[in-house]
Image (cartoon, rainbow, N blue to C red; front, side, top):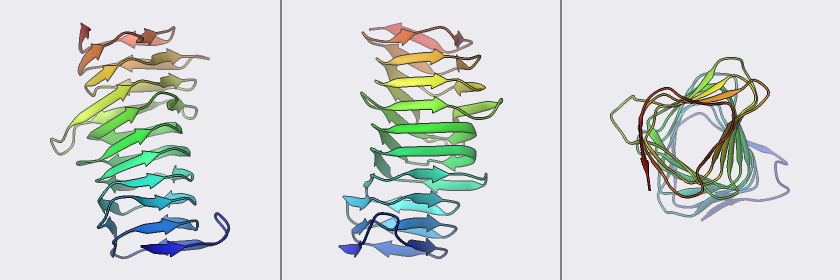
Length: 212
């Protein structure tokens, strides 16, 4: 394994080219501006902040313990599975997720941002919240024909603008809009298991629904 130790976020490692590592453990702030970061072995841990400005992440599943920040617009690609236990902010731009998965037990805050393809599993205790922007965050736009799923066992909520859901999903969690925010189901095939709750601010615009 390759380790970058020290106090969490005490220094920054910048990636602007292609790098392949077998297994990474880092407390440093990791900033990806361009190029590819590939994990050859499962179980890498990013404990510091990940500033994901551009480029792509490939390879084996990894763990995101620190803050996961995609800010300032632009395009990036997550093409592996990431288990996220910390907090994150995706306030603008596009995240391409061909063969990508986010397993979320932390909190991911959104602005007017766009997911393309991919699977998002909001686990029990996990939360997606739209807190910025008067427009829409989309989950998810079809791009390369990959799977598109939002499976919510936690909470999906908007207090600013709209979360538009067009992905398929198996649901057992809570959806809500507060303070004028909305969550709109615009498409997809959804299985609604016991525990699924649609509170105020939820709009059913399209899609198909099966009560399990």
